[in-house]
Every structure is written in structure tokens, then in C-alpha cells.
Length: 112
Image (cartoon, rainbow, N blue to C red; front, side, top):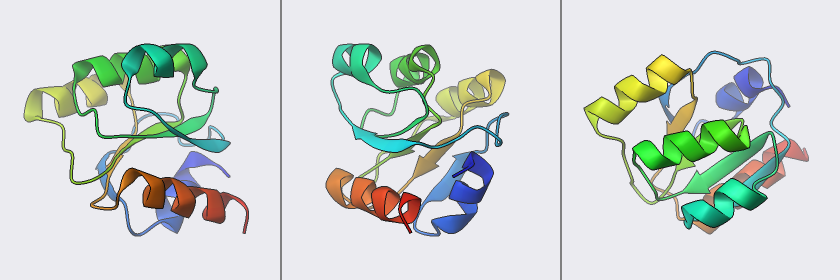
């Protein structure tokens, strides 16, 4: 599913930043809060579900070529990090859902 369609399909996620490349494919949900593991193991095109709302998470998402970041469990970027996401074109979404529930929702939408 293309990222632009993905954003529209999941109303449970709030868009914090749309990013630049809405034509990239979202392939799989990926859950991890340990940045070094996520950086080395996250598949390209993943919808990364995490509670890590900081500049380092933005860097990892960029390096791993994640399709987007979904901040779960009420995590939010601060204003400086939102500005950084805008500058780098990283799509960032947020939800109150637990990590597992958010990833399951993504999985189900990708396989409808």
C-alpha cells in the first residue's frame, strides 16, 4: 500500500508530519524501541511503531529507510523534532494505541 493511501486508510493515527515521499510503499509493521536494533534490523519500507519520540528515532527511520514512524501509547515529538521531521521529509504519525495494537491494525490494513 502506498504511504499516502496508508495515511488515509488508518483514521486512528494522527498525522504529525506528512513527509515528502507519499508514493513509497508501506510493506510491513515493525515494532522496536531499542534504536540500535531497529537501525540494524528494520526492513526497508516498514511502518515503524515505537514509543521513542526523539531526534535519534528520526535519524534511525531515515537510515533504515522506514516508510514512516508511528508513535504509540501517546508518545509525541517536541516542536524541535517536528521541525526536524519536516526538514527531513519523514512521515510521522501518532496514536494512543499500545504498540501491539497499532502494529496489528497496520498489518490488518495491509492485508485487507
